[in-house]
Length: 337
Image (cartoon, rainbow, N blue to C red; front, side):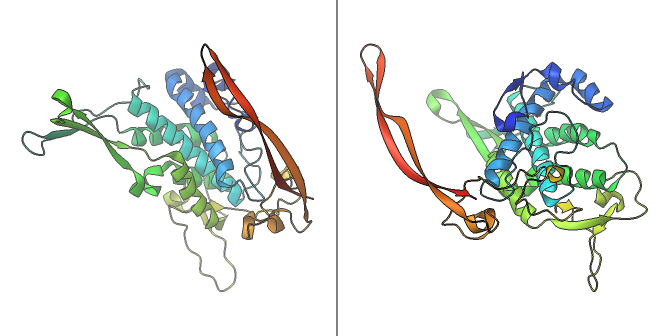
């Protein structure tokens, strides 16, 4: 079973057979049959990525609402905006991260491990590298799966391929955050031998790194003679959007790129998959993009009293019940007009 990418992060379960039967390309169907365990991990990675997308942009006009609601393949967002660039990158990062973790746990039979690396530090103390090079394997599988959906030879496909690559390079984005974890082995915990491995960083750190790249994403345009879709660095499919007196430059490999300016996201816009911000909760004390003034698009907001009743001060009673009090909390929510 894999977690559905739909339901707005509700975490519904979807059978792997259904995932592998909905709108897949021929290459993806082949991967479903040859590596079903990896596809299951891939589904978990997509769910994690879309949840992290909403967490990273929770207080903004565009907050990843609706991303991942449709389990069918296709463009995650219909317009080629910087928001689309971010969702493609974080989806690729989530898939890479989940596949790498599953590989390191030994959950994937097709993932090769390298357990033979060992180095003697001193006598009698030793340490050895163990586990799998899961991140590299995860990136390779993520590329085969995600890039397979880009069938059109157009600028949008080239943009998606570029941003997929940025997301896959999770180890480069957060290379300073990769942790070395160790476990001691020996009589009575003497740590005569220590097994160490490189652990992937928590995914929220990856999401934060991609959010910073989203803020600095570059608007680009396609070359008129661009051929089959390839990452921009592979053959120059896209160039930065340029204005008079601005020199054309190729986007860097680590930059997110997009083709269209973003809409305001203030009003409902089906063409942009934007639900609008009316009725959205906002932070009236924040300034900038996360404050009520910006999120509510100048329409103002209203303050609504909120009363919540939750269980509290729970204790165990012999035998065998748990008794809780009901605590009442009063607060104020601020809602966009």
